Image (cartoon, rainbow over the protein chains, first blue to last red):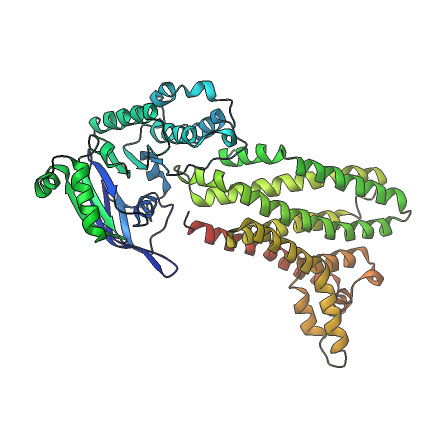
Length: 237
Length: 255
């Protein structure tokens, strides 16, 4: 579904992505892990074309996103690490604005709005919101238009345990619907139940891309988090 | 109508700065017309005021507005919307709002005092200078990530074009007065949109006595019709080029 071919990205002299090659298929739930600053967010943003690679191509459903036009993003729900919203807008206005821009989507997925009781907060201005409530708004927007691909950058960071649980259940049900899900997270324990594959990145390149079973077999640990921390430590050494 | 443009227009028209700007322009215009008894003199005074105030407001307001919309831009970018559409909508939003403010402020006194026929060139000038300085504001705000630096640059650019440039030209003329530098000076004048507009308008008003030094050379060199056409062409370039460069940068910008 998404194919990344020899992607490089440089910010000035610093190389952030180095020769990334990945094939991401339908129905997979992939964890993108690695130490801070290894290029995870940059890679996700490159798929969205918010960051434009220095070299290389990214294909979405077989089309090069550099030339296919921006409508391919209709199929992607993106939840940024830190959602930035216009301060003077109210929650309701933000959601309505985005809805009005995407009026071609008929069936909206308002589960998260209901589960987070967000309608009661619609009159609140974005500038007055706590980090967690902002995250809820970001989560709602990423799921709202029934995308086939979900790109979630640290989705549960800042959410309270109940809100995080609601989001996790939403992610699980999205996975069962056969959507492609890409998650970055540092909370390894919570990834355990969610994902089917792991991509491990370090210093801007992909160290490995394996399914969870293979990984567990290889390391001999039963839990995914232990298996991953094994790699993180090895990578650091 | 384009949805993004609609959103931006609603947002800007609610902005107090735009309302204050309209009132300020209207007040200035009325008081000039009440105080000056001869028509052309009033128009020249108005022109001078226009060439000082409009560039300042246009460049500052557009720069600040772009910086303050950075979150909104980011929100839109994660949606399936073309980048160029966002940037062009922002540009037209600002142009429409500031032009509306200008026209609403300035038309009633012009009509009432019966200056409207003579003032057509001034009106055209006001419209051009608004677009030009919004366009420059876009270029500054895309090149400078830091808001404070961006606003500072805008002020400097305004200061340079509104006050320093004519002085600089005068200085060069005095220093090199013994050499035949008239033709190169014509080219130098093209480097400042404010000077160009002043020349264009004063040629039309036939007030050569009040022309700056640059203006005198211009009239001598071009004669009226050709001079006006060339200045108009250069002014349109001034309005387009900074914006088009900023659009190019915005299309490839990393967020």
